[in-house]
Amino acid sequence: MDTDEFDARIRAVPDGGITSAQGFRAAGVHAGFRRDPARPDLALVVADDVCSAAAVFTRNAFCAAPVRVSRAHLGGASRGHGTIRGVVINSGNANAATGEPGMVTARETCDIASQVMGCEPEQVLVASTGVIGQPLDIGPFETGVPDAFDRLSRDGGAMAARAIMTTDTNPKEYAVLYRSATLEYVDRTFTVGGMCKGSGMIMPDMATMIACITTDAPIGPAALHAILAASATRTFNKITVDSDTSTNDTCILLASGAAAPDAALIEQGSDAFEELSHAVFVVCEALARSIAVDGEGASRLVTVNVTGAATPADADTLARAVANSPLVKTAIAGRDCNWGRVAMALGKCGALFRQEDVAIDIMGIPVCRGGLAVPFDEREARRRFESSEIVISADVGAGSCATRVWTCDLTSDYVKINGDYRT
Image (cartoon, rainbow, N blue to C red; front, side, top):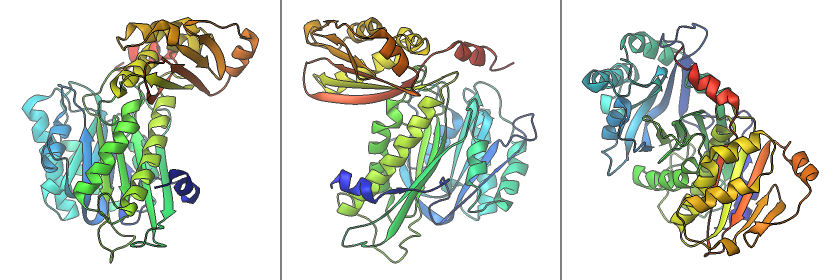
C-alpha cells in the first residue's frame, strides 16, 4: 500500500477519542479510589454487542492481578485475542503485588461488570493504574461500575480518558477516519480512536501503561491482534520517560464492525487489512507521542533517530541509550547542545560501530562528523532549543537498520513529583 497516498485520505477527528468509532460508549466516574470526589477514577468502555478484542501486556515479572486476569480472558499469553463486551479501568491503585486477594478483586470486578452488561465475566477486561503494593478494595467497584454503566454515552470518552489519569497533566485522546479504497469496502468509512494514560514509569516492553483503542471496521480477533502487535512494536514500545517498565502495562484494541455490519471480515494480508493497520498505527503513534511529551516534569518532547545500525536490535539499543541517558536529558532541559553526551550514550551501549563512522545532528545542526567535533553556532543552537520538540539524529555507519524513539527532557520537577508521589 502507498502510505503517502493513504495519509492524504486519512483525517483526524476533531476532539476524537475512544467513542469516535461506531458501536462504543464510555463513561468516567468517581468511584472512591481517590479522596477527591471531583476527580473521576473509574472508566468504563462498553461495546454495543460482543466484539473482537486483542491486547498486549507488560512483561514485568511483578505482573499485576488485572493483567493476569485480562490475559486469561483473551486465551493466555500465547494468544492475546478473543471476544469481549467491555473494559473496566481504575486509577489510584495498581492492584499489583497484592497476591491472591488482588486476583480475587480483579475477578470480582469482572463479575460485577458482567452483571450490568449482560455478558459472561470472561467477556470483561480489567486494568488498573496507581500505587503498587496496596490492597484494592472491591467496594468502589460495587457502586462505581453500575454508576458508570448508567452514564454510558457516545460523548463519554473524554470523561473516561480523565478517569484513567494518575500523574498525567492532561487526558490523552486521538481518533482518525478514512474512506476505504479497496474493492471489498469501497467508499466505506472506518474510524479508529483511542485514549491512554502514562507520564512516569514509562519504558514499555509491549505497549504503554494503559491504552484502549477502538475501531468500527469489521475484523476478527486474530487479525486484530496482528495489527495491534505490529503497531505497539513501532509506537508504544518506542517511548521512554525514565526507563522503568510498569507492572500494569496494558494496550487493548476492540473492533465492533458497526461501520459495515453486512460486510465480510477484513482478512489478514488484504489491502483493507493494510489500510486498517496504518490507521491504527497513526492513532498509536499520536498517543505514544502524547505520553512522551507529558513525561513527569517534562518541558519538551525529544525524538531520537538512529540510522546506519548493523541490526534492528542494535538500532533500538542505540536509540534507547540516548533516550534514557540522564545526562542527555538534563542537557536538553538546560538548552545545552552537548553532543558529547549523545556520543557517550552511543558508545556505552554495546552496539557495534566504529567511532570514525559516527555522524550526529542536533536540531538539524551538524555537531559531529567522523566521530569528531564540527564547529557550530552555539547561539543558533540555543535558539533552536526553545522549540517544543528536540530532534537528535545519529548515524553510526555500521549498516542499514534504523529506528526512532521518543522521550522527554529531565527536570527537577521529575524528582519532586516522584518524591511526593505517596504523600
